[in-house]
Image (cartoon, rainbow, N blue to C red; front, top):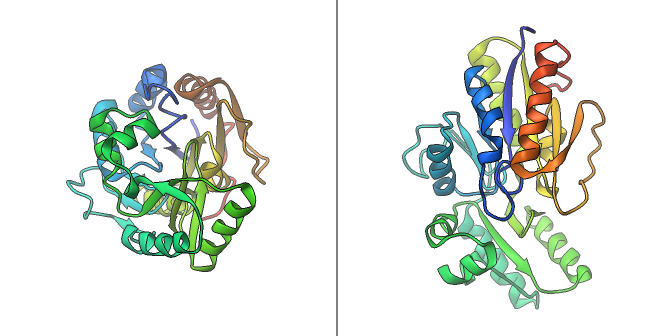
Length: 272
């Protein structure tokens, strides 16, 4: 075995969780193998603290986790949303003020802050309990933009001028501070290298545009097949593409990568 240790960073919706029913069961064999090898699995997701805490318990994960597209990093044992390890993003309240200004300028959109719990259910496919957890946002506002592509591009440009980002996920355009999943990945990679005093190889798995920064930053990058075309990244080395969708693709590619690691074919390729 190579002396480097592995860290796995994973998107959730459409990647570890099935796009339609949010099940993770198809990835269970690979998750069990990772647990047996003592390899941390770190959620790096647009989901909220409340959502990830519940998923941690259901899946049996015990690593730190990253929420709301890289906005904040939490320790595994955090009891509430105030107990961050590291905060990178802007507050949701600041974001909502800026969005109100853009709405006054004629931009048409609706987001979680506008919707009842029932509307969140209709727009996400979540259960009532899951929708309640998803609404507990600290650092981002997912929304559906109603205008055309030209006005949407202008909307994004105006947000960027004010030091915000709008990242397109599987369903929603997520408005947040100047942070991304890649910055959060590198922050945790550095912390683990200090803790372990050994080289760390990062593996990142994602399926949509808001995962690009995470896959660019990772040593090993995995695109999970979805109903859309694979996004494009600049990175060319150690980039894999699953044949299967969602958690089945997660399981398939992780088994291949762990075999490569056991044969010492994985090497760190990024600097941090």
